[in-house]
Length: 358
Image 1: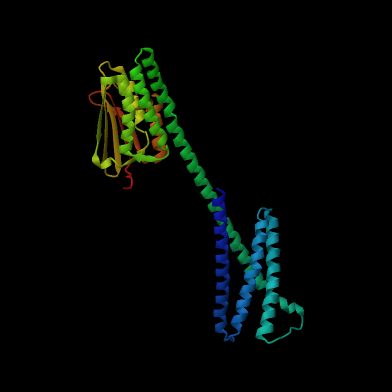
Image 2: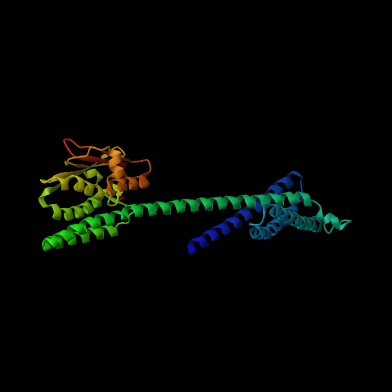
């Protein structure tokens, strides 16, 4: 963070000197073009350069002064700026007139020393213009910084939300799996309990290796899903049948990591587990124009309550998945629940099709 801040300050410092040099070079160029209209001698170009250089040097202290008084009260800031601009303009007028009379008029001396301050008012307006530009650019940079900070804060909050949504699934899933392992140990099914623990270890390793805020290819998501299903098949054996129908064109499509697992878990809990003869879960994915469509369907008994109530009151899985999709895609997704034919539930997810780089 300190390195980034130092780099930003370096960029701002470089930007000031570039504008300072360009601005006063432009001032000199405009005055030189104006002198051509009045048929001034060539030596007048030296007067113009010296005048621009004096303005360049006199405005550098103004920069550091304005930085020091940046946070004072507005009325005090105005007074200081007016005073500093007028003082700088007076010094600039004396330097300009001295070089003009000493060089262009070969040692001419005015009758009064007050003549050295001639054109102070005109130069005061130039100094005020420089000060206005400085404050305007500075305020613009501050607004950009605040905007950048707001975007960064929003991004960090967004990432924290995604991590919370993903990680809150792990305790839910772990509770169910460890409870099943405990049951297997109690009934002396130690071999099955050991197999289930091994599968659980592989699944959790996969979960930890994938950042919750990042998307992964659908093919990897299916691999993770199969690790989870291997755990469940230890529990349900032949009662659980899973069919994967993934179109070849969507294997590299990017999806939220482990977004299928809670939906499959929901189907197992509310469909397969309630059927003595078991049931089937079908996972289907295909591309439709610019969308990736993923369907999870089961042949369980289904439910009679409205789909929205099922999402809100049906436990962690459905509501969590919907919230993750909303956090990732905003309004560019759909998450619908409907009755499956001839029986069971059907979940359809539609998200923008994004493909991993080759």
